[in-house]
Amino acid sequence: MSYIDVVEEREDLQCAQAPILYSALPSKPRARCEIRYIDEMDVSPRAEETGDATFIAAELGAARTADERIRMIRGILNIIGFSGLGYAALKLDERKQPEYAYLLRNYLSTDLLPRSLEGGYLLRDPHMQRAFESSRPHVWDMRSLVNASRKDGIDPPLRHFFDGMRENGLASGLAFSLPIPRTSMRALILFAGPPEHCEWITDSVIAQAIGLGLSLHQRCAAYVQAICRQETTNALSQLQQRILGAVVVGMSDKAIAARLNTTVHNVDYHLRQLREKFGARNRSQLAYLAGRTQAV
Image (tube, rainbow, N blue to C red):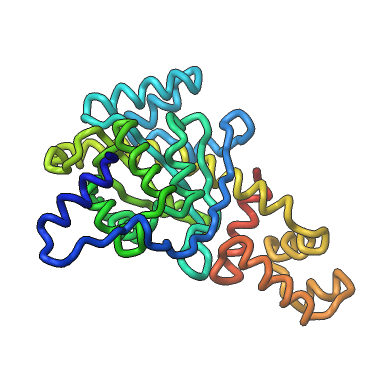
């Protein structure tokens, strides 16, 4: 009998209604989330973005190798009481579902976070959904995950995933999210430990986890920003690059159209496309973001 069966059995004993076979219910369709891995050796963030605002962030930056950084993080996790840590930068689609996620390969200790994203399981839980929508920490445990998922049906893949979490010592934890500057994404930061209840996650544990999460975010967000700049620049057409360069130096639409021998309407069209690609709200923000991109 799996852990999910145990939870369902306990819930059924407390319920006067006839038991429901949740595993037989069809689950709602879930969009596949594209995973984009980032290798630290392939990306060059700016020094001011990785920063050293906290002692832990400075120590992570001073580590000579990725393995040394991982050992440092795991040591801090053990002191706090957690056994797992996950960091994912998520981009949502118009339905508020994860469209793609950036994961730093060097910080993955298990494949559970990629599997959770690919299977569409992560944000099915209201605790995780609320954690992603705000910076407020949310505590979770296996019972809350199972109960939140029962309304949609716990299909065999989800059942297997939950059992995998428990077997890997990831049965309760803490989650919160933070915005990634100069992007339209948010980073979801997950902590997990082996206890199957969340009573052990005290205010002190939460405070220590937030400190570690903020330090990790300072470093990881810099790599996400760098890869976003790189991908955005590579995706621009030659005309868009020229229009962007003109915007950076403060040229008007009419002046840009005259220089590029095109219409003002065409310039306006491409500027709307560029604002969407850069996640800019207006022309001034687009010029600022483009200027930083061209300075890479």
